[in-house]
Image (cartoon, rainbow, N blue to C red; front, side):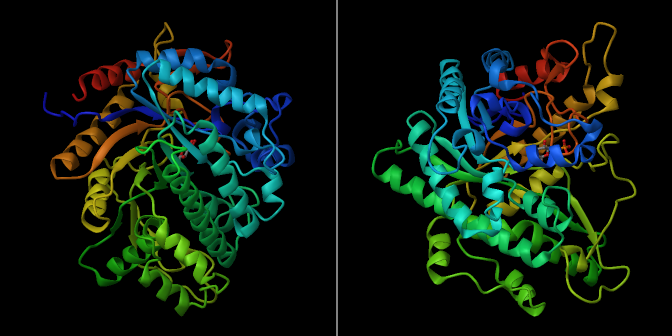
Length: 469
Ligand code: BG6
C-alpha cells in the first residue's frame, strides 16, 4: 500500500447542529439567527426550505452512529447548538439538550468513536444577535460562559474541543457580502466583529485551561479552532503586482485569524494595511491583547474546499475600502478542474501547500483536516442507478486526490493527524438548503429520511480500516 497514514490517524466526518439536528423547539431550543431569517425571508433559501427537521439527527443519532461504525469512523465532529443548550442565554440549562448531547457522546464512545465537539458553527442564538452578535463584548463574555458550561458538562468524556468553525464565514456573510443575516455591508463593523470573535476564542481557551489545570478536564484534553483555509496563488508569480495582490488576499483571509489564534499576535503587515486605510479601530484594551497572547490554541482544524487565485485590480479602486476586494481581483485559471455543480475549483495540491505553510511558519502545530468534500447536485442524481445506489466515483476521485497530497505532506514532515470529510450525510446548509449534497450517506427525504451508503462510503470504509490506500 503506497499511502499509509501514521498510527492513530483520525478518520471520520463532520456535521453541524444547525444543518442536521432539526429545530425541535418543543424540546426547548430557542431561535438562532437562521430560524428568524428564514421566517422573514424564506426566498433567500434554496427551494424556499428552512432547516425545519433538517435530517433529524436529534432523533436518529443512534442509527447514524451505527452507520458511522460501518464507515469505520474512529472519530466524528459535531457541534452543540448554543441556542438549544442555554435557550435564554443566561446560564439556565435546557435539560433535554443536556440529555441529547450526553446521548450522542455516550453512543459514540460505546462504538469506539472519539467525539470532537465544536461550540459555534454559524448558529448565533437570536437572543445574542439582539445584543449585537460578534460586535458585542457582552456576547463574547456570554460565549466564554457557555464554553465553560459545555466543558464542565461533557469534558469528562470529550477530549477534543473546538471553539469556532470557520469564524471568517460569519464575518464575510454578515458584514461584507450579505449572504448571512443581518446582511450588512460595512467593513469597519466586520473588523470589530473579527476582533471580538478572536477574543471569544481566547477567552474560551482560557476557561478550558483553567478547568484542565484544576483537574475538571483530563490532562490530555486539547482545544483548537477550525479555520476555513485556501492557499492563495497569484495569476502570474513573476508579476510584482499580482504577487502583491495575492499577499494582501492572504493577509485578509489567512493571517487575520490564524496569526492571533496560533501565534497570539495580530499580523503586523495586516495591521499596517488597516492603519494606512484608516480602518484600525481603537476600542481594544491591553488586557484583552494579553488574553489573546496567552491563550493560543493547542491544535488546528482546517476546512479546505478550493484555492484562491488572485490578480492585481483591472480597475484601480477608489474611495472607502468596503471589502478586501478593494485590493485585488479574483482570477479563474482557464484550465482549472472544477465541480460544475458548485462552481468551485478542485485543486488537491492546495492541501499540501497549506500544510507546508503551517509546518514552516506556524511551528508545525498539530493539525487535521476538519472538512473537505464535494457538493454535488445533479452529479449525485446522474450517478444513481435503477436500484437507487449512488455510484459517486467523482467523490471517490476527489477524496483520493486530496488524501494523496495529505500523505505527501505527512511524508514531508507535516504534523497532520487526521481527515474528516464534509459530511457524514447529505444535509441542509445555510441558504443553499438541501441543494448541495456532500454526504457519504444519501438521505431519502421522500422516504422517512432513510439513510443509505453511497459508493464513496463503501470506499472510505476500506481506506479507514486499512489506515491508507
Ligand atoms: C463549509 C461549512 O464551509 O461549507 C459547512 O463549514 C457547509 O457548514 C459547507 O455546509 C458547504 O456549503 P454549501 O453552501 O456548499 O452547502
